[in-house]
Image (cartoon, rainbow over all chains, first blue to last red; front, side, top):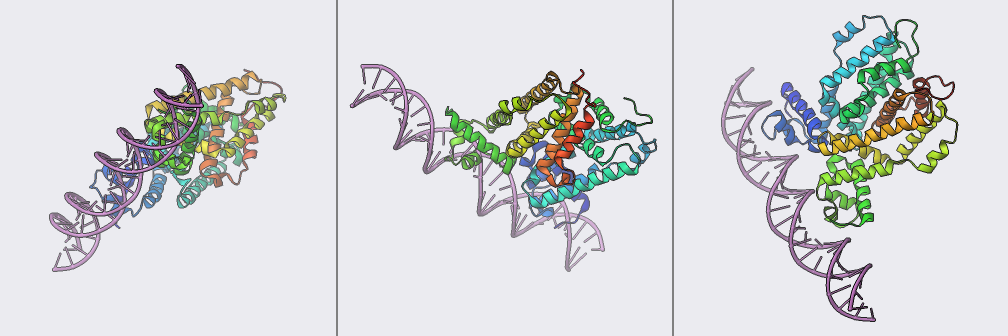
Length: 197
Length: 197
DNA sequence: AACGTAGTACTGCATCCGCAGTGGTGTCAA
DNA sequence: TTGACACCACTGCGGATGCAGTACTACGTT
């Protein structure tokens, strides 16, 4: 098993691109070699099985999707309000648009996890941690709304993202930014301060 | 090209099972033969390409997901209200649970559509029609909430379903029925009576 | 010089698709 | 009733593809 971390990351990034552009169907060790522009057989040296590749892709995606700490801190300087929540969600949408490959690959992994117990366990752990973190962040920051609000926003945003990834034209009549504002306005309780409606 | 409709449907149903259990990766004409327990080569006689199989699977799923007309009529006897909307959404959840294979296959098709223009067009048409129908139904029935409400409910339900299909344990702390009631309560306007446009 | 890694080439294996040929069954007309 | 025809199920093979794995060489660093 090779140890070159940079090369491994390059292979994983290539795997993400393959997943996004060719789908789970096209993800083979050879395809990763090709996408990463390394000699055939290289991926075999770094990942024993396809399963191992998938597992490591998972954690790589996790790295890539983690929001930038400083930008987040910057955004949070504002006073907590429904508007601020909308801003945060729009930033999430922006991150998604900036790295669609990771999100598409994550969708592929979701489906693949349906048939792979280890991957399923890892994905569940990942999403659970993320949702819990979201809830905790929201409450700690004093943003309006309770746990259930956060979960509902999470679900609506997930639906929004899934649609935008796979059938973007569907929501064309409803600009996504407007939808985000609407969902915040309706799901969160009317806030005493700020918050247009 | 063979014309036996019953056999074709059986093959398509088998293809849906393959998609759900093996994923897009495992969907080949031969795999469909095996799943349908028909001789190898049969699927080739019914579908020229894999693409044609996918297209027909799409319409077959559409058939399978169409709600039962009479049950719907039965439900709609009640007076229009937010509660009624919650009931309808719970019935949707029930249908999903009763035919997870179709929903999983549909998710696979969504991703596959990312790479197949024809399929993408068809999927967009399908979802657009469905969303429009939902909006129309909602408004015509005098249910509370406007177009945007319906879209938001659609998105939240999509997120709910995606999560339940792929990482069901994630939402274990939040019973889905409760989530549905919460989303209806918050997304729809406080129901005095009837819906405004 | 030795070890780890990159790069290359080759082998073996699995599987897939497409086609063509064969046999069986149902239908229609005489 | 019988015979001809059309349709369909099924089998088996040819050709091709594509993948994983491995052995071997080259390189560079220590």
